[in-house]
Image 1 (spheres, rainbow, N blue to C red):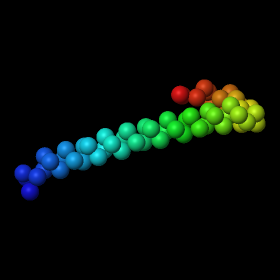
Image 2: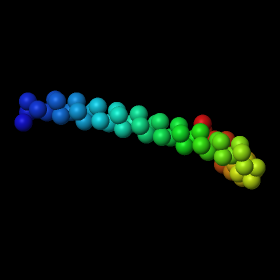
Image 3: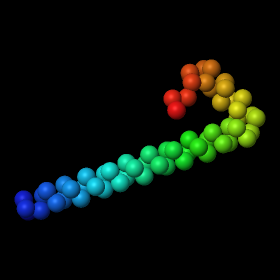
Length: 60
């Protein structure tokens, strides 16, 4: 069992890195879609401005 531990840790680390990369890519796609929706729908743009005024600018 101890001989397999380093290989198992490497596999788990690789999986975690892959999941993190996928999560960042998904978050980027969500931000892009949100920006597109806000830019193309005046009501959403107004609401986005109101939310920014209440809670501060977007962190992105």
